[in-house]
Image: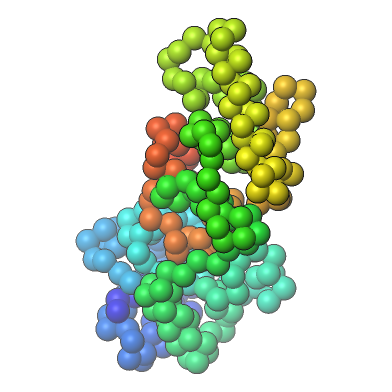
Length: 267
């Protein structure tokens, strides 16, 4: 298994590289104090795991991780941080995937083993309402996928989730669901049918509370759902490691957000 270590503090970098090279699971370890040099190296040298300092002046660890995932989606990410356990909790991430400085060998090896197990299993835990946007869009209630009577109702929900709580008018929804068509009176009624079908489906599954319609605007309530996109934006290490460069593949309009993710990776 090949690894890289990136830290702008040379002494810490040397220590981490030395510890990593002492682990039997790692066959090759490269260290970098410059993030751009690290990215250039990865482009020609596939890696399995990356140990990244969170707080670096040129590019922080989370943005660097996004860049790495864009180049090498299968790479596991482990962050190195000087923050306390309390601060790590504030990142809203799974505890594993972070190593507190100073790093000891046992914890380092545990992270390597954990990264290996996650790459092999790629297991997924479901919340009460779980939204999957990476790859194909789906929504799960207590682990079971929702079925929609109308494909456009599912697409409307996908777009509302993509807007991350932003209000969407019926006219805007129409322009997304029916590209290049005119929003006339008959189409207004068609949108009403789609909205009604969506509300009925959500109520049928007992999750009507995730949708708000007020003063002509529709929105989802992000705090009511567990969404991989939202957690990715929060720097959730589990979701960063799950991202494969694909977002809501079945919808052409989703390319805008996929581009936003790519742009964020290059910040």
